[in-house]
Amino acid sequence: MPRHLLLRLQAPLIAFGGETIDNFGVIRDFPALSMITGLFANALGWRREDCVFHDRLQNRLLLGTRLNTPIPRLREYQTAQLFEKDQGWTTYGEPEGRASSPSYSMQGDGRKSLTWQRYRDYHASLDVLLAVRLNPAEESPTLDDLAAALDHPARPLFIGRKTCLPSTRIFAGWQEADNVLQALQIAHLPEIDGAQSLRMQWPDGEGNLAGDRLIDLCDERNWASGVHGGWRPVREGSFTPQGVQI
View 1: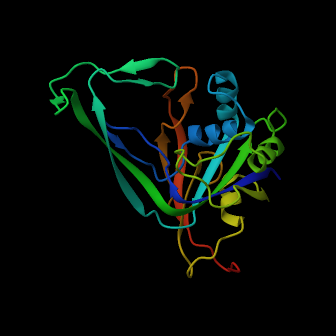
View 2: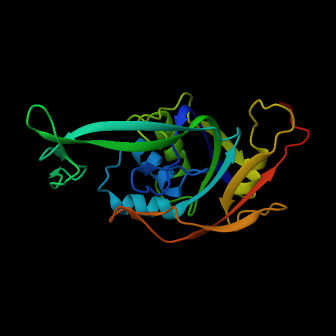
View 3: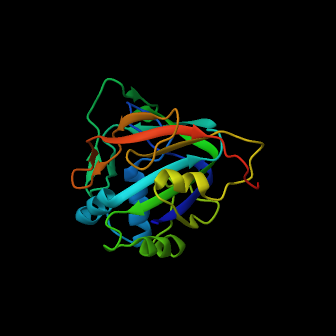
């Protein structure tokens, strides 16, 4: 029976980022495959330019998610005053400026500036369980390598955005199961009120649930170009645990 690595994502704020639209940083209900790839890569100490390593790990990951709590959302409003001809450093190591624009207003000191606005969504007080398997299992890094890296990461870990620091240990143990869905269903449950229905997402081909739905999801990153593309089939559904000791 295959072994699955369990991860527990808990934090006051979590961001399962989606497609940014203009100045809105939206979030998904479930973590993207690319986000979990990046979490493991950060723990392993890989650099952003290690594209081959990232792509290979992402291709091997079989990822399932169970939401142990509802999804309360919080929207943060951010502002910054930017002056004309200001420059800032970018992730690729080169300064970048902004073009002149009628949007800039004259200030009392003779400089022109504008107010930059952004909206960032977060999940508040979320509790999430992940079940992960690798295919092929024996290739490096193995599940044991990933588990060790989560407990002794090369760099500080965060959940989606750098401000989203985990409030508990991420490595949550092991679960033997026939497939990812079964691992999510039988893994140790948190303390919940009554027989709560739990939402889940898992790869197509890794189990079926009555009433589930099949969707195509774009959550894989091309680590060389830095953009997302392609589609993978996943299933989403809910189940109510019965006869479990809470």
